[in-house]
Image (cartoon, rainbow, N blue to C red; front, side):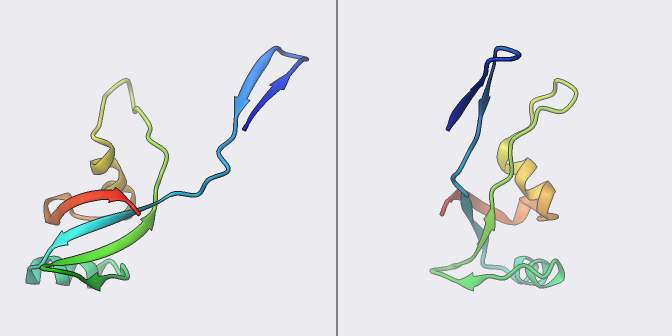
Length: 89
């Protein structure tokens, strides 16, 4: 939804959609231990562990680009090296 404020001539964008992402982890003992250590709920899929989390807004910090998937993992304390892929749920 877009709203316009006539008092300061600005547009405001509002997201009314809550998005979730599906994270696929390697099916290894390291990944399983990590999921349990960070207390992330997961299911065991076809040769992978899967977890669903809420997406986070992407931010550019100090003008530096960071991979959005890496930033998502950092936010949740997930070891990015144990991730196979991330997709919208």
